Image (tube, helix red, strand yellow):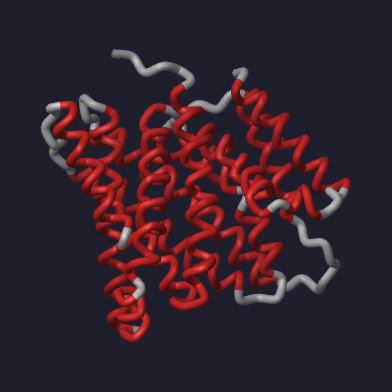
Length: 297
């Protein structure tokens, strides 16, 4: 049965909205668990829910569990580890004075994804898609730019650019893992790769905390009640990211995902409590232009 051409849009919008909600929850957990601990919640408590999603899908569809192959495992491991390292670089950038600029630079991820998709997966990128990616990315950069004119340091900018590149590589790795698995049911295939990715990330970060911060790991287990919902939202959002990667190029998915910035604006009520600066209004216009162009190609 062919997949409707518009389905990836629905998957991406659900994933983006879920990610905004998850980020809000993780922000609260940062107070008690620290940044690394709150980040690990996403993987540790998300894994059981991903396993549950996969189990329900196998029962509902009657499909067998697709056997893993070496290429799928390698692509997924690449994506999982790239995401962990990218998160570490993001946290390092956040510790610098100009962390807002570093955060903005991470938003060039769709450009990285497009280039890496061409090189690693042989994906085609037309002029219209390239223009949509550049418009939307430029819009997010304008909206994310700091209000002040503080002194910029080269180090957080380098961290931000590298983190954006690695987040892009993670998207490519996950899409490559799904494609290499070649499961007859794309939903089951996407969720199988999701479970594998979360398992690899859980093992990696748990091992790191065992070696470097056992007290922090113990705090994560003690905070299991508030962490469960954050883990669920993380797994729920990731489920739809992986479904989108299963049916559409990573470049188009990650470009449409920039609407997350607009969702975050609504969530925090910034547009209602503060006047929108001209630079922010321009950014919103560019995002809408890029997304509109992307959806009409």
